[in-house]
Figure: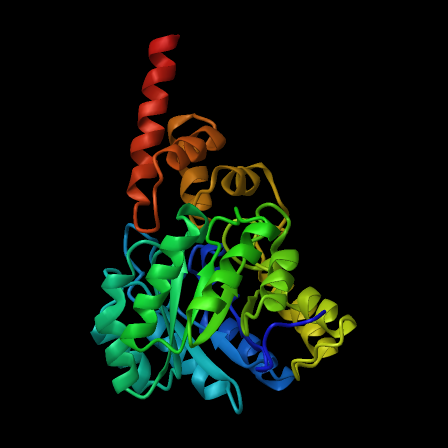
Length: 342
């Protein structure tokens, strides 16, 4: 594969953040320690650890964490000899106070995440993170839901605030390879900083999309062992590493150790296999935020309506991360309509 960048590729393992959605934010310190120890030993570059919805996400709306995320971050930092611990922060969910606390505990990278049209709310957090001496990346979520020109405009804002990289974040797993190519290419032409790509596998193209992103010049990529992430999960780390190795791209991460870690440590944590089931498939099809799946399934049982109908309606209403409460409203409305029809 011919790459449009000479910079080395940096990988972030996200199973301990994005995967938090799958286990209803119930990770224990023992699980974090064993996974991080294995990742660090295998040579992973960055390991993201926080609530699934980022710092400060342990709330009634998003789901309470079993263990305070600061304790999990501290555990992860203590287990690392070479990897850098990363955190996610969504302004309005997490605050500068949580950011400072995470930094004090040793987190070295923060990814400041906003909806693809709302980069302006990231300015304070990006600037303060830089002042704290952290690596800082912008994370433009739901990247499928805005025109390419708007995506580039918002990425340039994050660059102006001090972001060292900006990610195209396919939160719904809705992008197709040509759409990824168009977005990464446009950002590479417009930005002076690194470009990242974060995939979800709801349409079974997370690996393909990540490869296209790399080909077009993305130098920061994400993976999740055993696809442990929201919806149908992310690009499966051990698979992605094997594919890249076959293509002659080595990241310095031990493939066999990653295979063993995924099989022996992460696998038993999964509540069920990360298949593309009807719920996650409809999220990619409708362009719905991947972390909505568990909320929609719970609302489906509570109100007796099909989770797919809930997700399709949420997609029509163009809900974004942070609007999980809309799922309950939609489910209640659909149940009322059904009763009226009967």
